[in-house]
Image 1 (cartoon, helix red, strand yellow):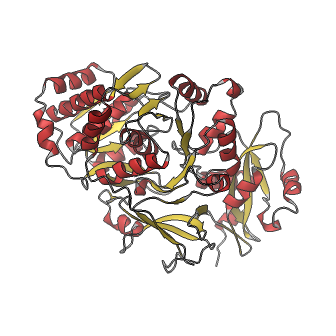
Image 2 (cartoon, one colour):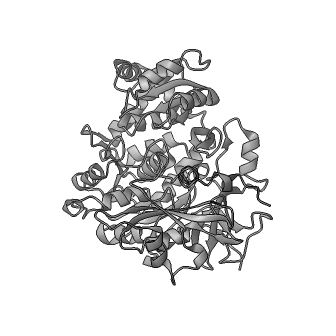
Image 3 (cartoon, rainbow, N blue to C red):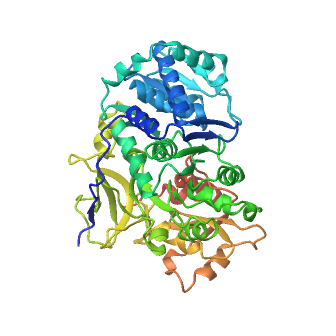
Length: 546
């Protein structure tokens, strides 16, 4: 049996714009709470949210923003981010999400590459002085007309101008928009070179948010705690659009991730759903006062963004009460979700797989050399096709063609297996696979095993250069507080007889945290670079391989 699956076709795709969908939500649940910002206590009903969204949209229109123009947003999670997301959609302008961790070099690149005409920015956040960085890079930017800092009088003036403008303008603009129009550019964090701008449409984002919400069983009674960043699909797509397409409530626990503030938001706002990447859930479970939080309202949620450890998922189900928690798998270029576990899947499948293909999509596990599906159970490259696949990388057709083949398949670069029921398991990145002495080793398998060690909280395994075997394995470990040190020798003893000898890590490094992107993806290329330096493996790294 081949590793190929196609999703169901009911309910049908939403063939409307994001703005039209928001209008429908307001007509249906206008008096219900739409948005809560915990750090300020501000709250919006759906009707109030629409009024402020339209004020923001008309304010931008008064500033000269038109359909197809790029509007950048550079800010941590805040209510204004939500307003900007829906306001630009109302105008048909393309919102460009800028990573809050960027500095001047990356900001300059994105401003120029996307041709941003108006930049909406926070003034500062943590150690980032956005105002100073904008002042440094804005002069000389050909496209950039103006920057508006959130919280400044100019932001208030933007909304005031919008409230005074003719509301029929937006109705006129709406008649010119189509679901296939580009609406968002998200820069993917590449491991080499500059990031690429994945260009997504109304149809891409709206439907993906909708079907993720369907997978979680959302209704207008749900309240979704969203600690994941808005600049990524997880926050603004699966979070905001997952909520609005079901009339549910968006809860912003804090501008940036804080495990205690996240659980406090769940408790105080009586959230029914909680999102997070695995490292977020690990941090929440590790809080010394974890047991003091009342999480009894939680029903569901999503763990995604990077491989989800089975043991962590089981603890989320048993200790956080998220009996219907789901795992989603995807990538920015696919809006982002391609597969999701179901609430009715058994515990094993809900904790040890990334589920089955989403509605209206196709997936296959293919031989990277031929593109043909491999037999069930064999590893290959996961590819996906359907409405969720991006329009392309902004102004980079060659790179688009490298990622999306002539038949419309998006090549993810992830290694996966599919069973005969269509459940998928991610076994690693094609580039992360370690070849030790001719044996293919998938770090994910070893990481899952290391979670069974009583003193290990989190584990990441990378391949490092070795003159004899080509590559050897190194385990980076986070230990529970008060644990005895784990050494290479003691880990080898723990693994002996339970893992094949070639899968046992030769090197061990104890860390407090892993290098990672803002979205929680582990930067294994950085771990490998550090390991080469610390272990003195430069000679092995430079050795030529056949």
